Length: 401
Image (cartoon, rainbow, N blue to C red; front, side, top):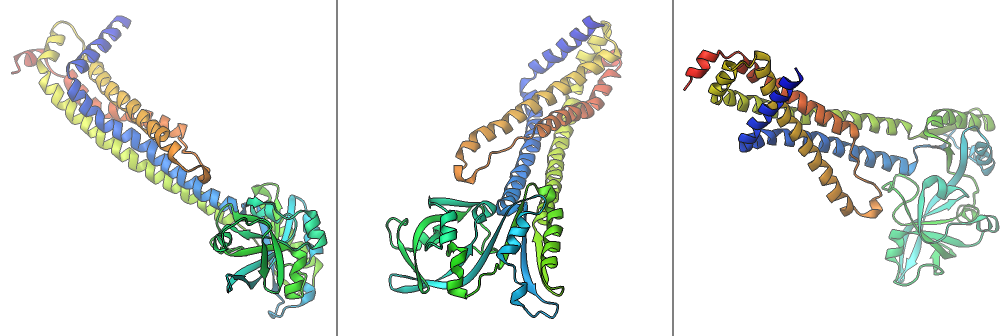
């Protein structure tokens, strides 16, 4: 049986070598289909990685809280979120960092003209929680926070609007106060104005906000958990703590980004499945091409089949011969398609700007699926012509012209 099996393989490979152009054209559809599966999955993974990175960059493991007033929408200063509340939140289970902000609109003077800016007072830990990227200089240290030193950080966009020259050490008039610029920053992931930080923002130590507002309470409280899984529990804990520390009628809005993150994951999964189905449709079309070409091949090789049967070849050997041809065409097509998909990754990846910070992922599962589905398609659609060839009668085949 082993000798017959080797002979069948040899006959099938010889037949493919004798018809190189036809085999290559038949293989082309499988190449495109298998490469398509890998590339569409890769595109879906890139989209998923990018979307999740945007959300996680803002803070997927962050809980944030605001005071919304009382039950009758009346605000009480005694119920505002305080620095003591922030310290209490810092000691809750799963919380690794807490910070607070107070933002208000003001203006700076540039070349004799006033420009509106968002002034944001921040406490210690704000940079870590919000993933701020310091481009020049430094962030506030403990001494800046405790002494109320008049240092500030400005956004990259605001720095571009200021007169050319070194930013660090520059004096900046913000409202009625003058600050020394100690750093230039940007959000690691842009929030498009959906947070207290806008394109033109100035950060100052939280203690200096009272010079502008006359208040020292927190407008937005942030709490960072040790993992994304603990966010729901921490959200409930923060809500409970704020209610317990203030009047019964006080209303606090405590939220997180977990629901958005989960929705993004589900959308990405659905997109991946849809794109894989598109790639499989391409493989099915290529399978139909394999079947059509092999049906023509059976007709063209009728005399060859008759001759093989006349010298003793069994029906199973003829069947296996044509199935092997279909398997080799589809298998080689899958390998070439996979190589093309991986080659595209290798060529394109170095062209991605480093600041974007992500690689092109190739899923090993998509490679396995592409190869298995390609081979299965070849065998499935190759069976009909192979079965037809195996049923030809030797006498009729030898008489065929």
